Length: 81
Image 1 (cartoon, one colour):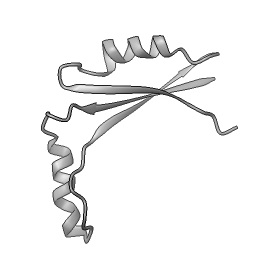
Image 2 (spheres, one colour):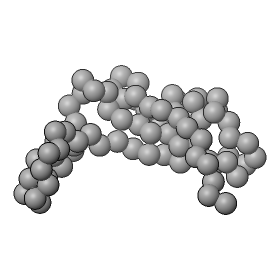
Image 3 (cartoon, rainbow, N blue to C red):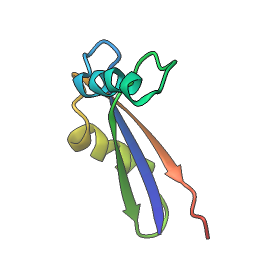
Image 4 (cartoon, helix red, strand yellow):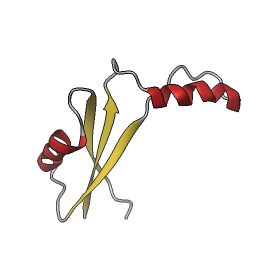
């Protein structure tokens, strides 16, 4: 089994209210020195056999990310076996 990981993040120019809420809460938790926080999604796709990056790209492009407001990156996750 091969696993491909797709990370989806809002584009830098898009406001991230969830990230902003986390960043605002950090000082109340005693955490200092954090300038900003961005929240995203991690999607794991398990393929039978070899990892198919072209297929993962198509899935991410058509289904997992909104290209108007989000960017995504794709990588193969090495197994720990």
